[in-house]
Length: 105
Image: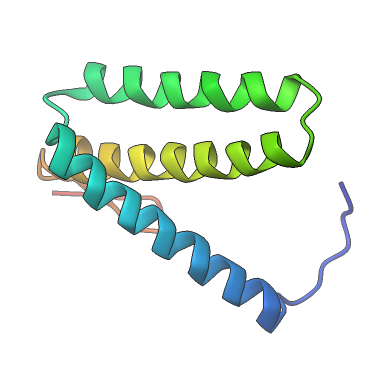
């Protein structure tokens, strides 16, 4: 990993926007099919499962097909992480601000 500091390029910003749009779509589709997490244990179990699926692909010396699957698993992992924040953490009345990490009620 390089430690060179550089600005984010417009191309990277477009890739981020596409990724986040895919995460949002995955979240919405998952909620239509499964509904929200009942509690933190369920949320963590789903996140763990998505992580394990991604790990198996990455550790398996992926080719082009597997890299596509890794991208899709990454989208699912991000969507379930977002669901955990929205449905477990924020539902409890707490949120964390990105600027200072303080918990707000």
